[in-house]
Structures are given as C-alpha cells and as structure tokens.
Image (cartoon, rainbow, N blue to C red; front, side, top):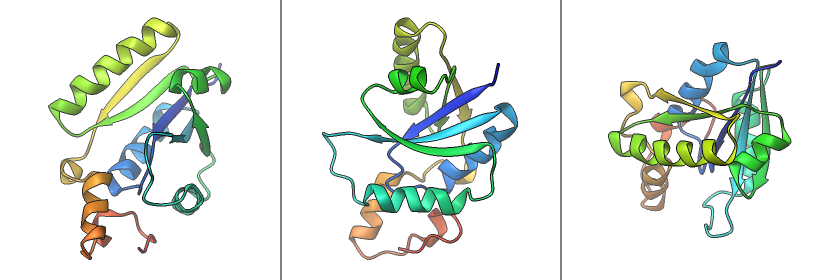
Length: 152
C-alpha cells in the first residue's frame, strides 16, 4: 500500500516554511498531495490559478508531489485520494494546540487517518502567509520569505 499524505492549506502565498516542510517530508511518504483548500468564507489574496502555478513551479520535477484543489472537509478529500496521512507543520505551541484538536476530530471521523506534525525549521518559525500578505499590502519586500523564483 502506498503511503499517501495530503498537505492541506491555502498557500496564500506559499512560504519558505511550507516548502521546507514539504521537502523534509518527501522521504517519509510515497506521494505528497499539496491540496489547496477552497474556503468560501475567505477571500484569497492571490488567485487559485496563481497559487497553483507557484506550487507547480516550485515542485516541478518532483515525482512524489502532486497538486490539487478541494473544497469541503480535508478528510473527505483524503478518502477520495486514498490518503492515510495528513501532513501539517508546526511553528508555535498555539499551532500544536490547534492541530491537535483538528487531528483528534479527524481521527474520530476517519479512524484510518493519521496526522503527522513536523516542526518547522527555526528560521521559519515567525513566517506565516498572513504576515507575508500584510507586508505586501504595505509595500514591503517579502522576497526572503518566499521560495526561490516567486516574485510578487
């Protein structure tokens, strides 16, 4: 059986922290599906097409990575793609508490699913998409927070 993990997120925009988690998780799984969640309650800063293009560019040539979009519950998407793992990154203790609660609820609804939490690299602990978006809104330079090749 293949070890398929879903790495869900809005990736609005993808950061070096996201990229680091995905690359570090590659040896753990046969396939990682980077899944852009479409949340009707949020207005994304960047278009879905732009986020898909960035992800495709960053992970071009990585045979163990695919990119998809979904709406609804992440566990329903996991069932659809036969994933038994949800991959998440942790920056802070607050992230842990949030992810623990979601992971436990997911496990109650889909007992076959495991949530795998990876600690972010220390240099990315303060980097979040929401902070990056705020810097962009105010005309700041976010180059150091984004993966190579992404220009905003």
